[in-house]
Length: 227
Image 1 (cartoon, one colour):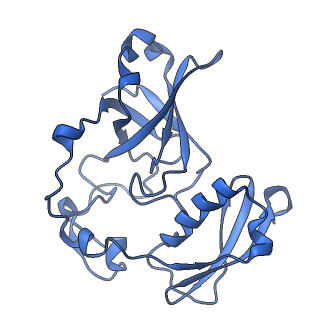
Image 2: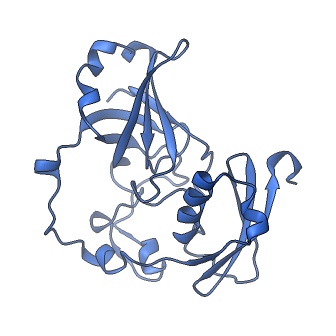
Image 3: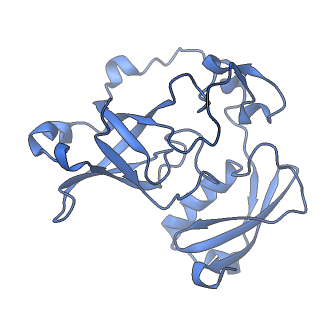
């Protein structure tokens, strides 16, 4: 398969990246086509769709090979499930599938026509192999079962975000950050209530700790001041 495009956003590492597409709708990414695929005719009619399927590759896996069983974060990393019952990146073919919102088709001078996407769960530099329109009349199955993932659909953390720290972000950005934090951005194997975690977001280092089901934002530091 050929890489037709790459995703660009502020997530340079997997930490704090949403674990599923669509969970944090305020997050924007830009899909930039490779030079040989910057053909506007290939996008004719795309503006008629609100959502797209993106087929992409897990390019930042740190281990080789696949795993027949994995520890899903939704189960706290304490229980193994078959890889084909999960969306783990450690698969025989490391391919991801995400449904995203198409916010804008934008013409640029240096990168040709790009797609502005909302709700992507891909990190910066992710290779894209194909784009297909989302069809609500066939792709949406309201009565479908969601297995163990559905049992934990409403899991989340209570977020304490002191007002004096909230002023570092605009209201829209703040809401997106709250959504990210409520999903528990920590790796599933890290549960130390005294540990301070941090990740870059909108040019700032967001630092927090988690005790039981409560996440507390401790500090917001401009990236140029972060150690």
